[in-house]
Image (cartoon, rainbow, N blue to C red; front, side, top):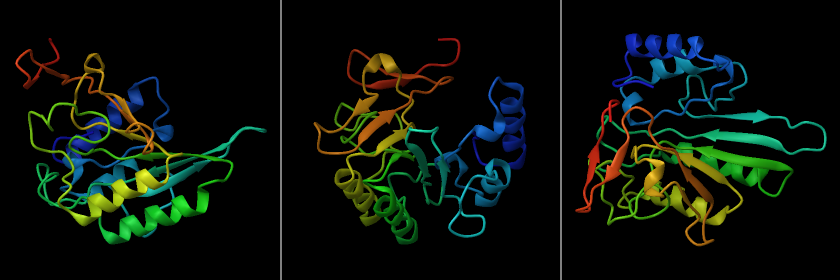
Length: 216
């Protein structure tokens, strides 16, 4: 959504969204590493009435959308990277105990019920799940590190609740790289990695990754 989480960037995001064909009130945003600088800005520019926050101005929340008659309800659990800076994804724990307790309580409440459970989380793990395939290779070292207990608890919950569908991004790798889906051979949740639109990355023949600008 933004580069540094500033007011002017969020205003540009909101204006662009409202000019699109999407209904802005129906867009569900998850805070990633580029929005870490100002939680209040993220809350003020993205929150809508259907979001349920565990505390006032919480950057993580859930949305429960009731299904049509005879169909399942849809629960969207939106996680947030709780890190001190844009580039700290791999040098800090991304999830507090409070956020993970909240997350696990929702999984316990809705697992096994007539509910589809979707989890939105911006970053993903090195050499586990989608969006990564060559020794953790990434042009910027910003993958969730397994060195931190919060990250590992999040991973363990995805291994326990296999019915969950997760959605992440962060690496920017294009769909052509075929790293956009994984369930770790049936041992974890179904995990979808969304590509970037404006700054698509791809592996080179030598096995390193590179960035392409919008002009290709």
